[in-house]
Length: 109
Image (cartoon, rainbow, N blue to C red; front, side):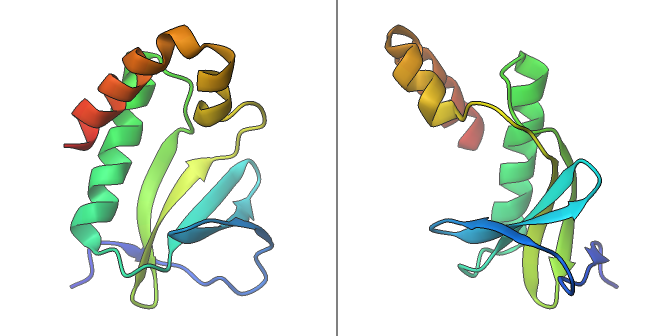
């Protein structure tokens, strides 16, 4: 039995690619980040939980909706945001870099 909803990438527009995965427009107001680096269920669930905790802490982050699978690859459906990334926020507020980094490190352990 599969715990995660299977999705298809057919017809989805690629928005960007990074070191570990690709981001696609999923539906109205949501994106899917599909990992292509072989991350397993545990690693993706850990990232999903970290996003939930960041949101609860009040850190501006994409709201996570669910973990999904596409074939054997795992992904996360997130709220689609426009605006500043965490990296850019740290550049704008370097005095808070330690705070952001410590919190992210703590929730990713």
